[in-house]
Structures are given as structure tokens and as C-alpha cells.
Image (cartoon, rainbow, N blue to C red):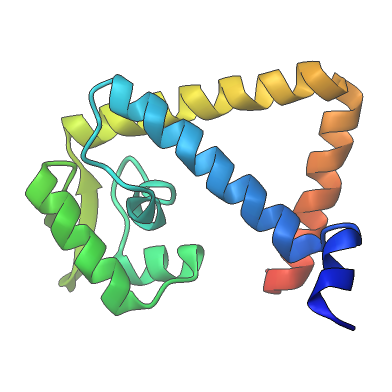
Length: 149
């Protein structure tokens, strides 16, 4: 099938999910920038979106985000330099380090959660609470099936 013919069809899961992700990231990071977090970029979400308030191991962040551990290490280095996280000894394993959010990181995480909650509420109002809840349920099932988790 020629590409021009494919364009006329309904967008597939990859196109829909990437459009949604990139648009969501644009809106989220624009709003976070307006709230004092202009230095954080979407790539940092591989750490900040999965980071526990008590701290997380880099290997866990890599597994949860689907990124290589080396990528997570680079992102953590950037976030340390920006003042969002710090490395601390893991009390459960002296050989390991925990990535722990700083006050600035906690502020970013809280504001990010609030922005995302408002975005979801807007979608629910637009399509209906029930329809949005069903969409999320099905999308979660598709995501779990796709990722094998």
C-alpha cells in the first residue's frame, strides 16, 4: 500500500499514542515552566515520573520507564546538577545508591501531579466521566498487554 493511501485511513495505535504523548508533554512542561520549573525537559520524565518520594534505585527507574540504566544515569546526573534529585546511600544495600528528590524535586512532582490531574479532569468533562473511565481502563489493558507487565 502506498503511503498516500495509508494517510487517509484511521490513525493506528502508534500514531494515536505518540500524538497524545507529545501533546501531553508539551502542555505539561509548558505549565510546569510557568510554575518555576523551566529547566526540566520531557526526557527527565523517565526519572521524575517514576521516582518515589522516599527514593528509588536507578535500576528500578530503568525498568519502570523502559530506558537503559545508562540513560537513567545521564538523566540523574542532569537532575542532580539542576537541583531536583540527589544520590544517597541505600540503607537496605550499602553498595547501592538511592535517587532521592530534593525539595525542588518534590515541588516539581507535586505540581506535575496537579497539572496532570487537571488535564485528565478536562478530558473527562469533554467526553463524559464514564467514557473517560472506560477509555483509561481499556488503555491500561492495552498498555499492559503491549509491555508485558
